[in-house]
Image (cartoon, rainbow, N blue to C red; front, side, top):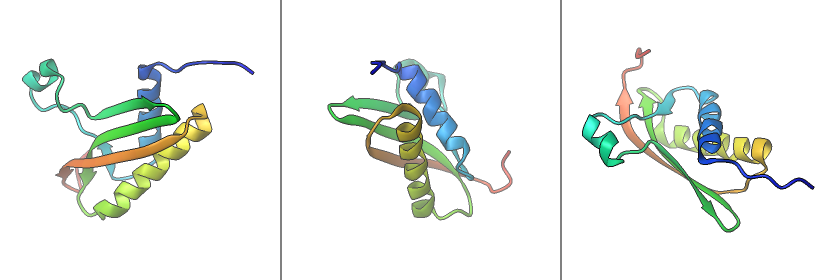
Length: 106
């Protein structure tokens, strides 16, 4: 058996890849330079726990999607990506919709 550890950066990239498969959602970004410098409003965090990881997401949803349904879809996609790709148990995925953008946004 090979022991390995994934960096926070690798986990965040895995998270981003998982979200690519969910239509109508994207990670939110900071709005102001002060928020970036203060470290506030991070759009994604992966926290290690004794028996797995906990994921916290700040998302932007496209108008017209059911937010509860979209949230469940994100939770499923993230959990499956972490399990299948990294063999990690996801204890929970907390989703917060920070914004809703127009349906015709790029």
